[in-house]
Length: 175
Image 1 (cartoon, one colour):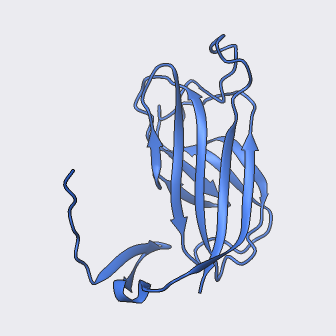
Image 2 (tube, rainbow, N blue to C red):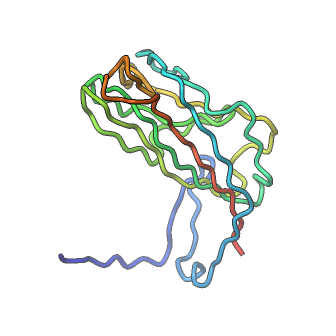
């Protein structure tokens, strides 16, 4: 298998809607320290709404970062679904009142059992510092939904138990 190379001096990333640059040379030797691992589980079957701009379910209503000003966050989740076969890719997370549509999303477009996932990083100073923020799984465009989230035996008799989704938020600080 062939591998390619990419030569860059600077990376540009979005920090609250502002292009922010970081020199690649400054990344040498950076080590992070995990400050907290926030975990959330959802395990009730949800009938999806096809209306854009809709929170489909609530991961938590009590997300409280330790230090959103100085820490970074890795968001990763897996959401089992019973697909609608309709190219549902307009989804993401809403954290408090901040939207992360399409951030690190992965999905499989099927009419049967499938999944929606997201994996992305939010840097320091981006998330709200407020306590008890809600985190929602949200669709942003019409018909960007499966039929059901967290299917169970009513969707497929081969499911021996209620399916579960997990959201993990790793809060870390770079040295």
